Each structure stands twice: as structure tokens, then as C-alpha cells.
Length: 95
Image (tube, rainbow, N blue to C red):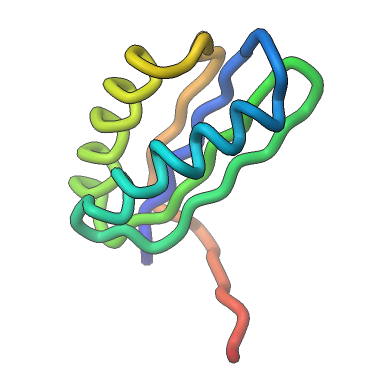
């Protein structure tokens, strides 16, 4: 079963700008990481929820370090909570 990474941040500024910045900056970094499966970002008020799926726990932890580095250099966000763990259940749409 894949591993998930979920981080909840608080942020200041324009949410749509932040999402575009993450799409242009964080997504390419994740795609270069070993074991990348999926990435999404949700906005809720002044919070950003970043979720990603990885092939292994090691892949998820490596992505977590890459994300911390990118956020520190590129975004005015503060981590409120962070989770890395084995998905109990994850289903992808069949196409």
C-alpha cells in the first residue's frame, strides 16, 4: 500500500498565487523524487492542505525533506500539523 504525506500550513497572502507557486515549484520537485504517485493542494481559509502519495515510507520522508526546503525558501507558510503514514485505504479511478 502506498504511503501518504499530509501537511497543514497556515499562510498569508493570496491563496491562488500560492497554489500556482506550488504547482510551478513543488510539483516538479516531487515528480523528480523517487516513488512519486500523486500530489494535491487544498485551500481552506488561511490554511493550505498539501497531500501526496508515495511508493514507500522512505520515498514519503524524502519528499517531506524536499518540501520543507522548498517552503522555507519560497513561501510564507507555517506548519500547523504534519503526517506521514501507510494508507489504510487508497483507491485510484480506473481509466
